[in-house]
Length: 117
Length: 113
Image (tube, rainbow over all chains, first blue to last red; front, side):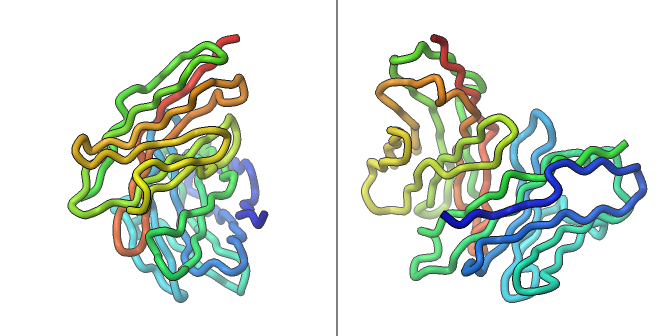
């Protein structure tokens, strides 16, 4: 079964540095998402991406964050000038359009654990 | 606005006994609801989904959930727990036109031998 893959599985970065988290969504999917889960808290929506642009973003997704689909396969999340509170598990997800959009579940990767020191 | 509330942060059962993980939802329209499972150090795996078809939804690994509009509930059940069911379970509602998901806080299921 096709999978969403995320790299790296664990990223350790000094505070203030930039970090790029990478995702390869399922190949025929059209919608892409990033979520994060701070340790001990719920999974939170960050951003959705469709047709090469952001379609929706949460309050968390401020100017520090950006997303990009640089080629036909990768979907990246960039965090500029990382802060301690950015430490979290970051999940990428993708979703097919399908005939009934709401019937299409999101498929998640295994996540990237980001640790800011 | 859509939201979900998972009523228990931790549930502990013995192997072979039934599992009940409770979830209530709030939605201004007919919702799409999901249960996801997260095993330690793994991603989120879809267990089952409700999308306004049958109210009793069967998922993988013997889990099922029943959508009850009158009670705004979507509880997850399994007749007989297995050790491998120990994980964190998330009740999730589809949050908007772009399909972003809104997660509950999660219920950690422990299974005792």
